[in-house]
Length: 188
Image (tube, rainbow, N blue to C red):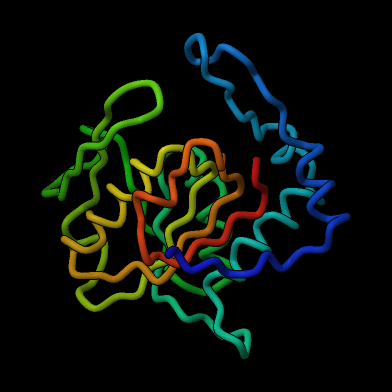
């Protein structure tokens, strides 16, 4: 069973976040409903609320950082993960699509709900023994999150938790990351 961290927001705050997420049917291909978070990002109140709530997954019971770095998954995980790292006072590590990082990298392939892809992490991006919080926008089939956890492990780090803005329950992505602590602000 995947460990679930409680969401640190009230029902009203969650409703405000949800109201700023727009469904775009048929994009990037027929049958997919894209979760457009652009309206949430454009509103400083909901953007700040989301970042602070995601950062809670990287704090211990006393409010202190329990991670050494935040790994953000390209591309919207960058937008959310960098300010989370800043709030926690830790470094940010980009997990990028294939061919976007210079130097030696670790690579992992995975399946999406609409295709195949490959992620990379610079070999020196995470120090051995580091505790890592993974941040992304959407948990769908779990392939991206599982591939990122594999990359962190190959680099010698440990994923402490994943913090996600949205989780699509029907696609059962949690099954791909058994035992991982997951914080999902919005479920759908």
